[in-house]
Amino acid sequence: MGRFIVRRLLQAIPLLIGISIVVFLMIYLAPGDASQFAISERANEQQVQQYRHYLGLDLPWYRQYLRIVGNWGRGNLGTSIIQRRPVSTIILERLPRTVELLGLSTLFSLLLAIPIGIISAVRQYSLADHTVTVVSFIGIAIPSFWLAIMMILLFSVKLHWFPTSGTQTIGEPFNLVDHLKHLVMPVTVLTIVQTAGWSRYMRSSMLEVLRQDYVRTAHAKGLPDRRVLFRHAFRNALMPIITLLGLSLPALVGGAIITEQIFAWNGLGQLIVTSASKRDTPVVMTMVMISAVAIVIGNLLADICYRFVDPRIQL
Amino acid sequence: MEKTLTPDLDVAASGSLPLFGVRQHKPTSIWRRFIRNPLAIVALVVLASLAIVSFSAPLWLPHDRVLEQARGETFASPSFSHPFGRDEYGRDAFARAVYGGRLSLWIAFSSAVISTIIGTVLGMTAGYLGGWPDVVIDRLIELILTIPFLLLLILAAAVARPSATSILLILGLFDWPVLARIVRGEFISLRGRDYIEAARASGCSHWRIVWRHILPNAMAPIIVTGTLIVAIHLTSEAAISFLGLGIQPPTPSWGNLLTNAQNYVISAPFLAIFPGLLILITVLAVNLLGDGLRDALDPRQR
Image (cartoon, rainbow over the protein chains, first blue to last red):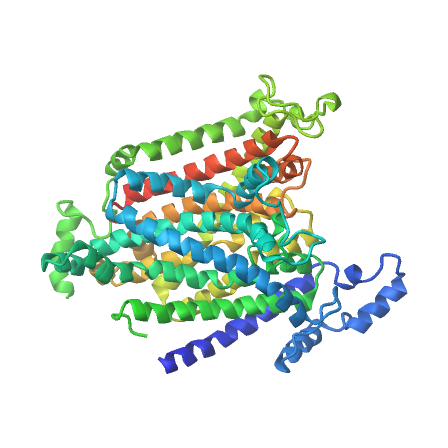
């Protein structure tokens, strides 16, 4: 197990180096650079050039690249060109907002999707199954930001139950109840969209497992249905959900970009949108690298979880 | 080994035994299974009508209606002559939705075709050959999956003003990795089968084995995933527009109609409701069609 983890992490190194170069070049090759967004519009040509020199943006691309990566090597994530603050401070400031949003919606989605998937697999083609199928297909098809707009229209504008956007009421000191009220709608939107997809996966993998020989054997030796379902079938049926969970770890970094944008939720998703449009290379590269590491770790954790759920799998 | 195979091959060639690797399901039985699924039929009819209505639009709905402004009638509610109402310039929201759908459907469909072709070819190569081509393609897949799609769009928008072509190319050229992985998996499992061994022993070239013997058996997941890519690209176009990186107004697309409508959601909610419903219905129909195709093409996989 230990050797497996070390091997996988070593294999990831070329990918991480490749990603950092590709992303750097993408930003470098796009027209314009951060200096034009960071400096006053009235600055003349000479001042812009001076500022670019000061930031090192006039160096050849590989020297700029090595400077950023060299900083990382020394444990320094660099400084945002636009915000003129350390990248680590900016990210740590926003991370909790995204974690609570995605953490809660993932938790609720799992709590809903797993039982829904199991029920509609066990009672395949029943009324419950057909209802769930129709609802989840609609949930998959619904554009998330349209759902968000409709919810704002209904719950904020018409019913005044929840605030339209933000993380807390502006001008008031932080207050947990107020914060939770702001959290309800974005979490609901994300939960609906994720639950719809995940319950389909859960249903089809449960159906797959229920047809397996060992499940039939378990039934044949006279075990009660409930025991066969939970002891024998359930754990194996969790596999695709684990893959999806592993894949959703990097989403933490990208945040729920659209949802954060529409509810003006100042998490990491908003950060990457503004930073990329202003070519804030240190911020963008750090976020992409964290997300790449999260992908590697997510896949690794998923593989390790497979081993726990299904002892037949050798790592 | 070859000796024992030869007689079988002769029988096969004469037609009394099924040929090796030839598609197992006859087209007629696929169709019969498909039409037994009422949801899939409804989905097909809905999609066909949407496609016909939007692509024939120039024949019955003058394009001028898309941009024609009526200053006195801004935000007019839906009526008989303007079923979707009028927008902030008094433009006919119905005409904009029809022409917008034309663009959105075109982008989603053509980009899905590009993704499907690239994904299939690379997945085939990696899965059939194995070895270093597999390693290279696998790393490429990982690389593309790791690059945030959004970053690509923001930077592409800096290079050139976003157009239908640029959006469909970005979607098409970068959204093939999932399909490639699926095709690769199919090819890895199929290339070891006995009938492929037999085909190889009887002197088939690699090309022939791939095209005639493996690909037809891997068609079911390719068609189904390809259909789902159309649905994903439809919602992607809307999401891209929402971030201001999609089709630029005044040219309408379902995505930017919805984005624009967000500003007037309190005074004119109907502007947001109709394009949203159209996207919802279309994506729903594409997904149901994909589901129907899966059942028809591969009844074991349910």
